[in-house]
Length: 101
Image (tube, rainbow, N blue to C red; front, top):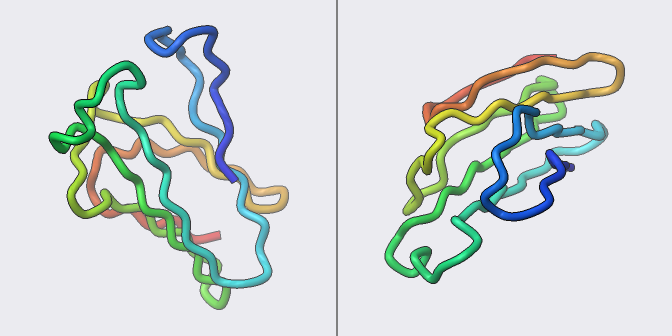
């Protein structure tokens, strides 16, 4: 379940991470989609997707760049992942990332 950070307008620069809360219990997948929010450039491939894959048995979360998407500026995304009482901060740069909880 991704949230924020809160913005007053699309191009506002924020210094807070995306907050991602995982509610364990079953396997789950999610695609976090992002584009510039102002144009139709996503039609030309200018969009970013972060695939999130939770594996319950190993209590791990894998993040990867979605097929057909590319990393948009800023090139790194700060993400704070919370599972129960455990919280971890990561910087996603488009490479495959795995977090174990």
